[in-house]
Image (cartoon, rainbow, N blue to C red; front, side, top):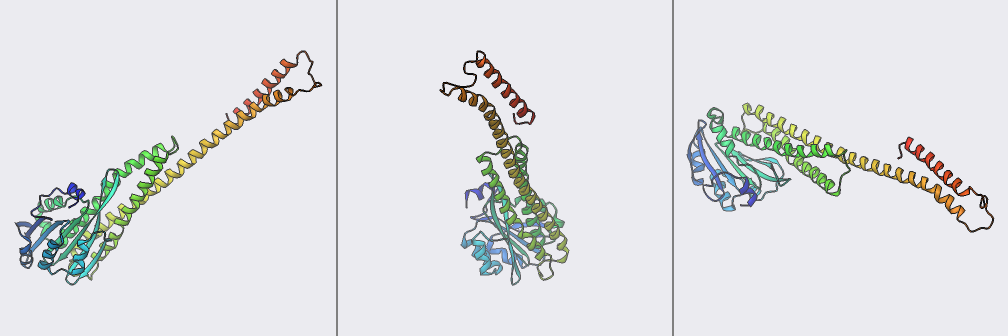
Length: 337
């Protein structure tokens, strides 16, 4: 098990890779069972087996496969993460992949949850960073009437929990985006600021790619061609779809704000550079006057106008001061100085 997975997992493990293995009847947990008994309990009318696995070894997945007759391709996908969010139907079982997200040291880290759903059972397999589903169990175990709806309701509860956990990530990013937006007009961005802005935009894009396909997953879950799901559950999955769309809209808004912030920073930087260039040009024009006059009268010619004029030196100084003052006033009036 990876260190990140351990960090976000709060459940005591019953055995290596198994976080929980329980059977429910009438919405109430009646026993914690070994994997080898899961198939027998799931076959009993009105009973639901809920198994939670955390980065299981292949041997454990094969034990679960034997209990519920799971498809080899689904087991292979569950063993190797980095799957795109999707839903597949293998016989009487559904295989669903969803991406989870957590903010770790300022970067969005992604994990995966693979779910097998069939008559009387649901198996969740977690990889990478993900908040433990113990909170989901505890919450719905306190509402037996809801949990009694069966394995399709548990599937809804897990998907809803995954989507809801996108929001804290977005809220933390939004706080940082607000700080960037507030400071963008105060000063142009440094290379470090631009690098952070780029990282945020890339993380938001990855989050969008993780959440976006779940819209299609939920659409399939509300279709009539999946007999594993009762029509009464369709409104709940449509509600999850609404939450996903809210996440996608928020991601798009934050990416747009970051794009505007970068453009505004460039404009501020260009404006400051233009202002500096105007000041330098203004002072250069002012200093050109005494430089030109001093250069002319510094030439070593015997015959020059006003060369022997008694008041020539103060006249030139007055002329320099007058011309420079006029130039300074004009530049100041035009906002260049």
